[in-house]
Image (cartoon, rainbow, N blue to C red; front, side):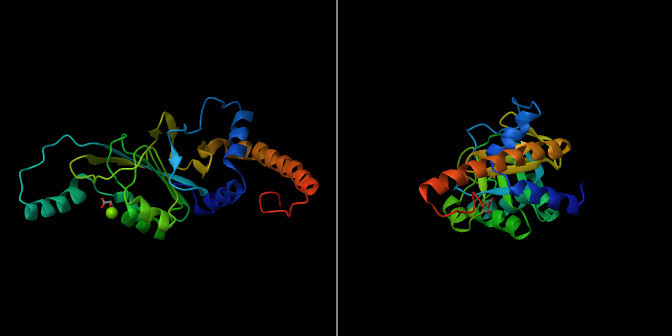
Length: 231
Ligand SMILES: O=C([O-])CC(=O)C(=O)O
Ligand SMILES: [Mg+2]
């Protein structure tokens, strides 16, 4: 576990940066081949979120689905959510957590507009998954930052089971460890290994400052008002 004050400090630092700056910072320490989530991971809507990775892993369910009446099925769903596919990480969420879910690419909406809002209310700043959320129209209305591989209609019932939390996970070939810094915007998602955060930030911030100065000159030439991206 990392201290919340250190977490908040890292979030404040990296919130100033664009995904592209962070990518440049990672390149500066020769991590060219690593840390960027591929273009298969896209935001549900254009937004930005920066947080500390809280990881969780779900694996495919291969048990049988019992033959049940609709009434019995509702009861079984309750059992399934409690015993087979629980969300024990939900009660551990801290302010600034970025929820990173390896759901084994299974087409099931582990997160919907209800439980993702619950996590958001507890302090989660965003979600990343190699699967897909459901209730996406409501997720957009609720402005829950969400990056995923696809969108899903289905529930987890009979499809996914909980495996582990607070462990290193693989999202589209990129290793994400608990405590890493996740920066996500319209360009996608990048992960900063926590132990390299200071070095990455130093170079990335220089890149951003130089870029702002350059674009300010062009804004002046075009007689444009400054917006927040050049201030
Ligand atoms: O019920 C579920 O498993 C996920 C969901 O749709 C929600 O939380 O809204
Ligand atoms: Mg729902």
